[in-house]
Length: 327
Image (cartoon, rainbow, N blue to C red; front, side):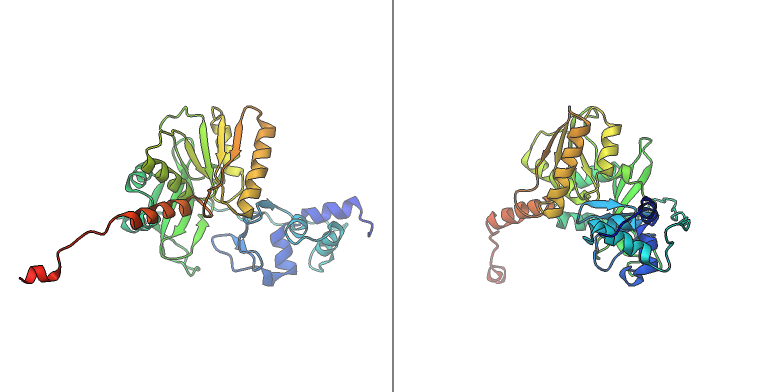
């Protein structure tokens, strides 16, 4: 194994992933959208504000070195040599001061006057009108248009799942296309205040955690349909990163019970186990459990199965034949 000095390793760790890819593998980068970059090899890997996050793998970081080792699977010394070996990147002994990442000022998406499309879309996803009504009254759900003249999705209708800070100001917005595949956080969103459905009792000690806002709404719908008397908070992570969860627990120290309802796939199950270990290590009084959906990938799959089964079980409505109207 080649000998690496501490200075070489330190220099390699200084180089962020975006700088590395732009200099060494520009063809790996997809065109940026709202300040976020994605890669050809891993569509769920997002680079934004100097950091990268691989949603599918449930990991993230800043440096290109971590990316090459944890995502590409390179050996450590090979990754250091790859990062420092690029002619356009600084070699050991040469100071490297990467430009600060561009920061975006967050502006909440403007709501449309008549949110009929978002209501129709979410009802097709099985969300019941009562849950939609409450979310819209709370100002955490509304319809908007995606604004980005450089994007193929410009002016597309979107669901806005908003997150508010302690003062009630919207500081986060997850956008989900109604007629498109668009799924993106609004530029400048504060991930610490991700979408959540508040408990009716602010002193509730229970928290249910999901990957997406639609899963949180689906869970609420399932409980509403079955008449379950459960009072707790529901939080969307917007993926598998624990940033929103950690911040939520800091703001709500009364929480003692956390149930992780992440997706029933490799990424979700792996992330749930890691999050549980981290939480219980930091806070011994927290009871944390992993409870993925028993059927389907996520809780919206569960809800849609229930809705479809009920439709099949309903007897067909008997209507008079057309001949009766003619006689």
